[in-house]
Image 1 (cartoon, one colour):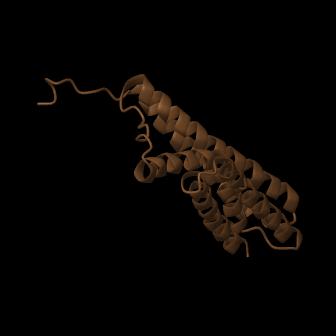
Image 2: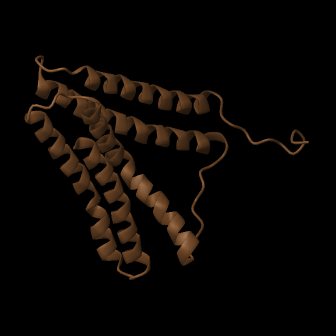
Image 3: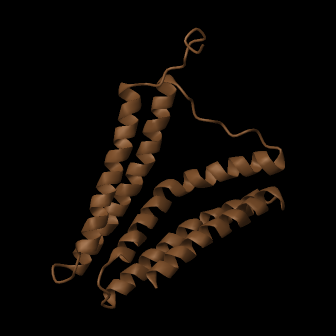
Length: 183
């Protein structure tokens, strides 16, 4: 049931996003669009409550419960930036909006972009870690918590990868090639 709900939440995310963009650009109802887009977090609350109920009803925690925590973390930390990304591209492609702003390719501006991206992913992982730890405490020592611990290790790995990428741009900033070296 939890996996089906995760899939339903993901589908619901894109459906709400589509409805929100249709309201904004086709129906010219920006306030209604905002209301619809603000309903997106309700999906994560439903998933969270359902996962807790599943565990309360005696389900052994497994990869599905861990995936629910990771999905909630991703949605909470990266959902807004995903919506902005899609919105900018839809506005440009179909409704005459300005081209989306591309991230800088070089120097300090690129480094800053990489740290902001890493920050969003780290936040997603920290939220997932907190939810997973809550699940571990909720189940207690009597339950099988190995799969939740595995997800926690994966989230720590995700944090490490993102920090390493951002750090590499700090230590070795990408520089624009000069005209003479491009030949």
